[in-house]
Amino acid sequence: MSSLAEALDLRAEGIAADIWSPLREGEAQRAREADIRILDDAAEAPDDAARRDLGAGVYGLASPAGIRTTAVMTLTAEVIAVKTVTAGTGVSYGYTYRAPADTSIALVSIGYADGVPRLGSNTASARLAGATYPVVGRIAMDQLVLDIGAAHAEPGDLATVFGDASLGAPTAVEWGLRTRRPPLALTAGLGPRIVRTYAQ
Image 1 (cartoon, rainbow, N blue to C red):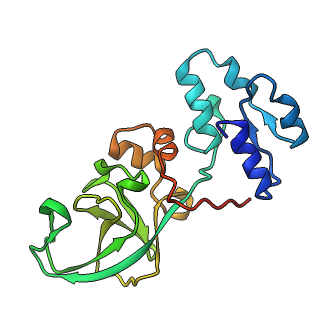
Image 2 (spheres, helix red, strand yellow; image 1 turned 45 degrees about the horizontal axis):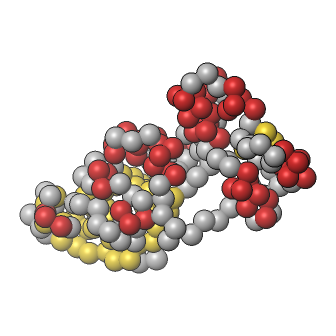
Image 3 (cartoon, rainbow, N blue to C red; image 1 turned 90 degrees about the vertical axis):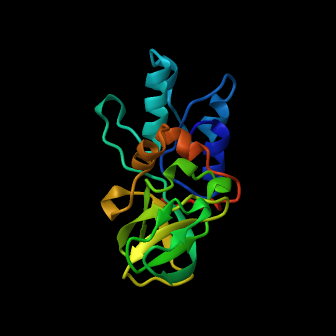
């Protein structure tokens, strides 16, 4: 966690697993009372890049000092509509994508107002119904569009924007590469409309 306050929020949600957090002066006693571990290495890291690696490692977005990590954050959003379109149909604002053949598109209820970078338009991907599909057209304020071909999907299905690669999801690291930003900045920039839930 990036702060003791975030770590305490997890404890309040019932997360009993080890939680590591950098501490500010005077916070050590509160951390001990909540059984929160001190990320001493963050204070000792020799430069800003090393500190970022340690922070990203907490979320499983990097492997500092050769430590094997697993992504701990999954971003999902609900499909709100599925449409069949014909070849040549333009998708989203400005029609920066036109369907190369008859296909189905899924509108997913998440967009740049939620912190999903617009640079993911026509470059990134998301997982839906057991497969990964491209994000097509411009990412809008409240939605993005997936070209799902002949796959079946329906409103209410959940699309995984990014998550654990071992489960077949695109990762935050891949989204970071597609949108030209560090994955830790991507995950930290997610907006307040996104509902946070915690599990262990």
